[in-house]
Amino acid sequence: MKSAALVVLFVASTAHAKGGVLGVPPAEVDVGAGVPLGAAAAVGPSTEVLAGIHWASLYWHPTHFDVGIGYVGSFRSALPGYSLRATDVTDTDANRLSLNGGYLSVGYTIESHRYWRTWLDARVEAMDGSINGASFPVLGSAMRVSSELFTAGAAAAGGGGSGALVAGTFAIGVYVEAVHRDLPPELGPNGVTAGITMRIPLLLVAAN
Image 1 (cartoon, rainbow, N blue to C red):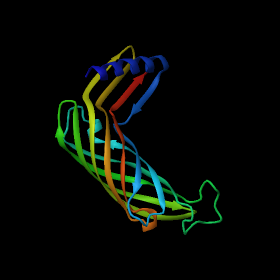
Image 2: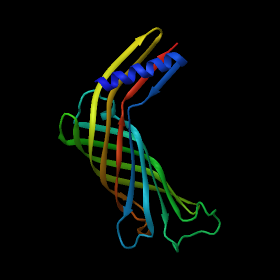
Image 3: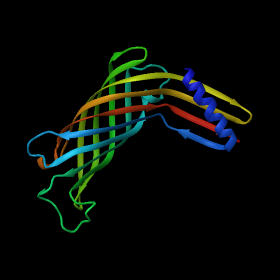
Image 4: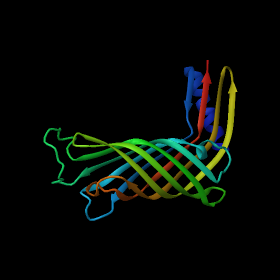
């Protein structure tokens, strides 16, 4: 894993110069845009953000299985004239639906090659929703298909009082998913999202 070795040497030299400890968890980070389905929806497109710790980001060999846990957020504006519009909120909060919470996902590769693979993932969500000063719990689920370019491996370097370890997978890809959340019809309970996904391996650096 030449790329990991170069990262290790660079970060180890930086940490040795500055001293201290640095750690980056094996993560998957996704950013996407969603559109609601259904004529009754009174909301526009959404920004979808996920960030969590994943097995397929940690494991330093190609794997056909993934499990992850982390943060999920969804943010969208309601259309003008939304029926629950409040009069006692600021303009920046008015008619903006925000969902924040956690997720658990499991996935399996439906096609896998040396440097690219395609995943099928299922996800469950538990979130807190808010709009116009009102808060409410939201449960959700999603089915995703994603394809990514990846490289996996492990490398370590040390000397002179410093050391570094990189283990896991670097990856970048695209995804599309169907999402259902237990929201009222006017807030778009069903939708489709597409976006970009990245994997970052475990990184540990220590220096005196």
